[in-house]
Amino acid sequence: MTMSNSWAVTVLTLFPDMFPGPLGHSLLGKAMSNGLWSLDVRDIRDHGLGKHRTVDDTPAGGGPGMVMRADVAAAAIDAVPRNDRPLIYLSPRGAPLTQARVRDLAAGPGAILLCGRFEGLDQRVIEARAIEEVSLGDFVLAGGEIAAMALVEAAVRLIPGVLGDHASTSEESFSSGLLEYPHYTRPQDFEGRPVPAVLNNGNHKEIAKFRTQQSESLTRARRPDLWAAYEKPPKP
Ligand code: SAH
Image (cartoon, protein in one colour):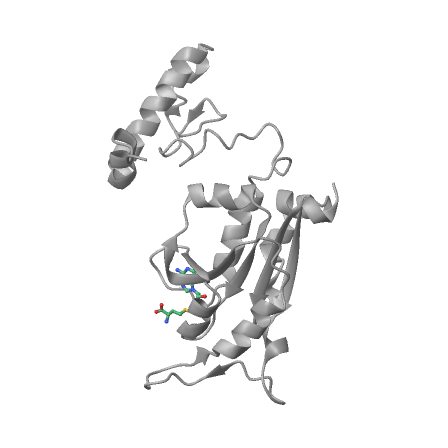
């Protein structure tokens, strides 16, 4: 496979040294060496202004902290070849990332990811470049880098050939709209807790039924939101 048709992510960050970090390890790191995906990390500060390479300024209207300048962010974005890739700003105000969105991203050509710092990004560049905002969840990080890594890790593991063929991504949590069933392995007895008997009887139909029941009861108990959508899928 040539690099041009492998999944290509560009990350715009003020802390390029943070990458590849965890993305260079284990199966993802191996897949990167094998050319299944590529990571292009760019320093936003290369587009900073003046001799101090300034990237931020005080918020208009006052208030604490600093805001990343629209012109600097736009220059960093405009220097990246788009190649039909979605342009995403990691932001707590974005649409929460879901496995469905991750699957879409993994099926596409890659992504351009903008990592914020400080109080965030001047709103005008978000509008002027039609940037999509994606959130990792309802909590606030100090910067977008860990969120970008999480998005990349979730997408890259779905690229064919990245996980061994023993691994199934069709049965895991969220793929069916349910949480995954619990796993067991040796020993047969752990501190008086046996592996559920049905998993030892070799009856694959019974095992599948048991796992579905477990998935359903876990989802009902822990994620009423997922359970409601599973019972009554939204009309297309
Ligand atoms: N003042 C902002 C938070 C800024 S946190 C607010 O209240 O919305 C600094 C940077 O961290 C953000 O620009 C964003 O890139 C990143 N970040 C913080 N929380 C995040 C989350 N939940 N998901 C994705 N990125 C996040």
